[in-house]
Length: 481
Image 1 (spheres, rainbow, N blue to C red):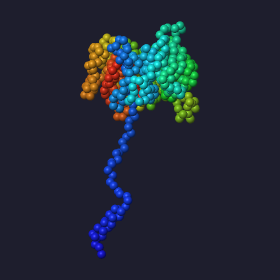
Image 2: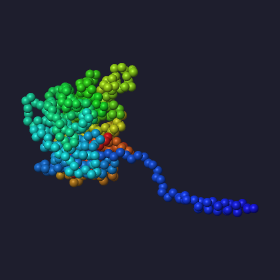
Image 3: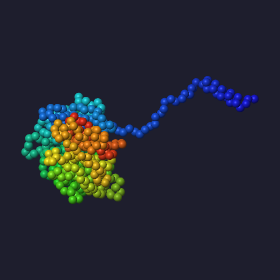
Image 4: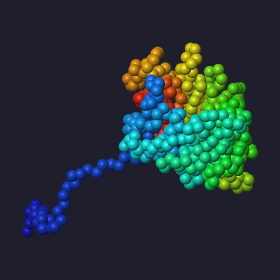
């Protein structure tokens, strides 16, 4: 009879023999399985167009497009574009960009693969030689992607007229030429809108021409306020807002009815004791149903940002409100109310709102020609409290001239890294674009008198870095907000 120890030893030996005779061998795991982390942040890009002819009186140098990776503020590509660019826009999602210049050229830039973008991929199209194009817009019109080019005749006509060129976005080709009101300045629309609106300010009051996506023709001419200069349309294509710089108002168009809104035809910005507002730019805070408008004032007076309530009734409200048509909703309670009027800087030029509706950023141009000169700035405004949270001052940075030549940048990256007071905005800001992100969103600012684009972090509203565009800033846009 075996003792306990001998029985255990024999059993272990038997097990070993049994395993040794099996075909399956058990091996230790040597490759560790990494834990699954959070999803990566979506790739976003900033696109900045620059004019390289500041020091070239002949104006023969090509412009440059600088593509920046938002996550690291690294330059991905710098293809050459049409010389002396004057205006730039991108489609929703940032897959295509379009540039015009005063020499009647239109560039189409494929932005879908920004890492490998080169000059040879850019397609140039000639515009009519008898007109100038102050701006351009690009969006899906009905079901087709289109480019809209307002055309101002270089020679006066009697009676005065204006034109609109509608182009396809692929290898841009003219699709339709339309006569509109005199001095057209901008085309308002959004993706998949049934109609677009051409703003003209050559008459008093100004007008907008409604262009139908189904026929590419004018269906109505709608009077608006004095000297309309810009407009925006909601992403649901229900309302369009036209900024009237001449009388401090915003005209409201019911896009579904193709007419001025019956309940609130006009929003007056001059409220709360503020007077003399001249609206110039607008953006939406979509999460809170707000329209954000910036206005300058005459004589280099302080500009203002207006936060406006623009809710529509919706399908959920129909049981209690049978007049609320889901296909053509009426204005909601408080529609058109100015919730706050916030002082910003001198001569604000553009405003960009974060996609979460929390903050707005205003590019204030100041006045280069004032005596003494008024520096530009960027103002950060909390849209919840209606208060300014930070003002980042500008520093004059003329190209190759005094007082601060571009070769001696006062707002240096070193100054930013050390937290010095020189962490400021270059030049007199004129364009601005903002995008959300984690841990911080970014705001990009360009100036017509500086080679450097300033980058601001939205978690602290402070300058992160400056990016050399190799030319003076024309406009910056982002691929996604």
